[in-house]
Amino acid sequence: MRPIGGYFELELRHVGNVPHAGGVFVNSGRNALEYILLMLNPKKVYIPYFTCDVVLEPFDKHNIPYQFYHINESLELAEDIELNEGEYLLVNNYYGIKDQYIKQLVERFRDRLIVDNAQALYAEETQHCFYSPRKFVGIPDSGIVITDRQLERELETDCSYDRCSHHLKRYDLGSSAGYSDFKDNSQKLVMQSILKTSALTMRLLDSIDFEDVKAKRLKNFTMLHNALGASNGLTISLAPTSVPMVYPYLCKDDDLRQRLLSEHIFVATYWPNVFEWCKESDIEYKLAKYILPLPCDQRYGEVDM
Image (tube, rainbow, N blue to C red; front, top):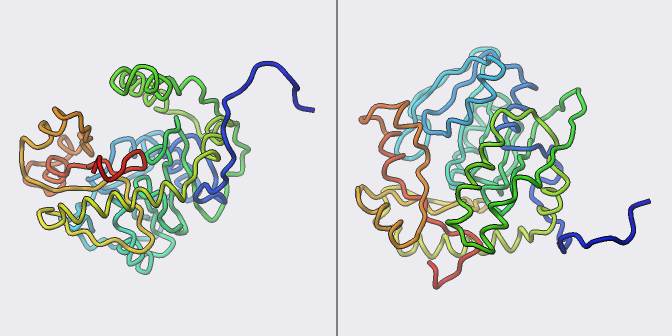
């Protein structure tokens, strides 16, 4: 019997339309990738230079061989990769705008493809893929695994209450006051063991109307694209399934990022590690430097855009 009485918990509604509800919910996106790698036991994995350095964590943890490859200005393979037995290709659904291209790669590589949908929460499931919901909604952690088998061992359940301070501070003190907590709480996810998503995070996920999130994101993205598409160095063509994480605006203006920041429009750099991995002449270096991921998420509307 559950406890009756006592102090009140947070009042969170039940909505129940979390994407990929049939997947395995773990404690982070990188651990979702680790889960897949442990299932596949690959001899080698090809990884794009243009990706976050946390992707390497499970490879280093389990001594899994990997090799980098280049992409082109369309955010697609720049090399003709041929996979040998036991080898796999890891690809990114960049910014949540490459659904159609991912389908083409699935046709070619079949079960040898691992899709990083960290930036594409609503993308269709493939045989081996993973998602990172905290890049789309206000939760402290979580990753979703889609694969054709499961780990044999039983996973323990994570606790995430001590990684929520940045969410709470944002309400009382503003986003700037919570930023150091955000970085500290993100650091707590480094080198974690694979655990089930915490009860708190699962409850938070259940309270979010993901259909409403989807509609607002698409409306904001469309508004930005209508205004900026003609001057965008990236060619963007959304599939019917696409729900972007941000509006990626490629503009070779060295001062534009700082001008946006001065107006309190916070645009991240995806990903600073690329400047160390690549030469200045590499396309990945230029993409990391000049793509501005403009916010277009569900917190905003027409006036903000």
